Amino acid sequence: MSNKVSRRQFMSYTLMGTGGFMASAMLMPMIRFAIDPVLQSSDGGDFIPTPQKVDELTETPVRVDFTIKDRKDAWYKSDVANTAWVYKDGDTVIALSPVCKHLGCTVNWSGDESHPNEYFCPCHGGRYKKNGENVPGTPPTGPLDEYEVKVEGGLVYLGKTIPNTLV
Ligand code: FES
Image (cartoon, rainbow, N blue to C red; front, side):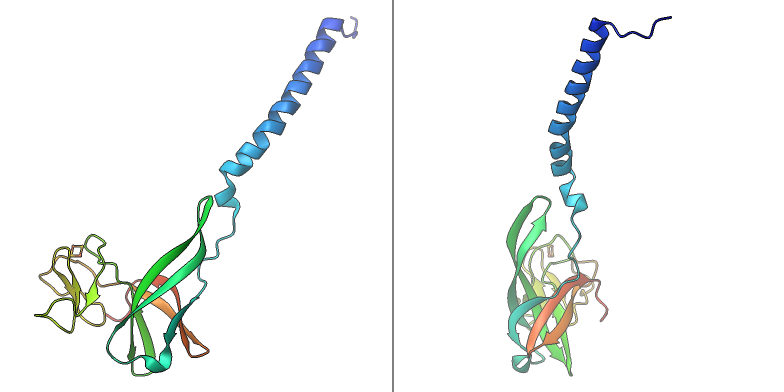
């Protein structure tokens, strides 16, 4: 039996090899692009500086706006505006998420005249105590989330939200 390769076989092997090489050269960048977010390391857990000075905090919650720079959302990077309700409990700085646990509206401190020392959600009348505990009989079924807090250089730094540890 002869091991000779015919001209036709040689041409088809060459074409298959070249075609396979070209296909992989085109597909690899596309696959790399498609799975890029999975390959990126997560930078979760970082603390974001806020403009809030610790010295100026009291036991009354104040609204603190801050920006998360270059937040990665799959393939896109963008600045994200965020808010927290921040107050002091003794020497401890507490920061609560303003996102209502009912359907996600934004709560306001003293937003309802008849309940001045509570967070109030204007969407469906949800109410929370100062520590974020939801008031029974109102729509929210859980307490407001807390932010991880760090103090550095006299400023409040906020991390990711965690389940409320105060209630
Ligand atoms: S979204 Fe806040 S009470 Fe419904």
